[in-house]
Length: 231
Image (tube, rainbow, N blue to C red; front, side, top):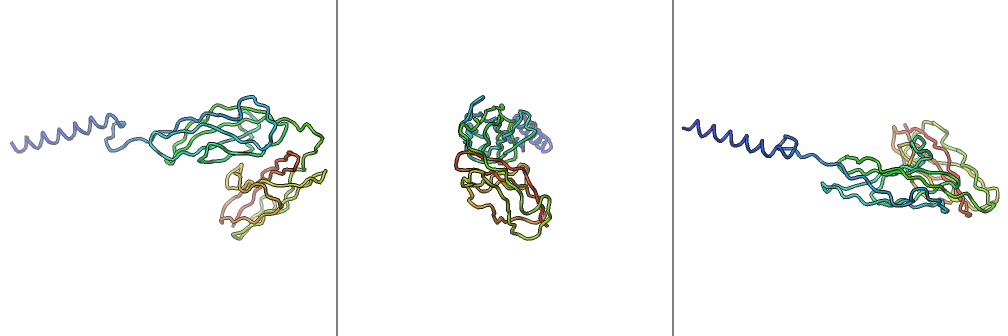
């Protein structure tokens, strides 16, 4: 009788786990974390002609079904295949401003990422065009690298980034600095009024950086991506 009761108890427990496991992929102790929904793009709308080079991008909020914190990855490219990504950023907000060049067709997309590392697919891609400068204003020169040299290996925890740019009409210039350990780099500091900046870095890291030059006449020049490695 005692063995019979033990048998019935064991069978009951197995049946309970079996039933509860049907709702969790066959494992009663594990519930999969779902991926976030795909964001919807709001602005700039598809095929829009933009007259402002300092453009704010806007997309829908995504609610994670598991209650995880959601961040967003935005990519901006000059080709529809995103082979040439000129800007990328990760943010928990649903808006982000980028400084663009005039007379360029851009493509953009956004995906969501939860705090568990799960990512949605990318949104549909939308394109827009920045209107060429209607006036006779000349855009600034593309920034020229001074230091550190391209690919240079550097020691120390503080690095001085130095570049140079000019404007043929002597307009006052300001700069947006993009810096990070990913390529393309993310926005680090904007509206800088000097062409040199000290930054704190970590050892054993390859850093990528670029500068966007802006004048007072709403014109901008986007520099190429440079890199250096810390020791």
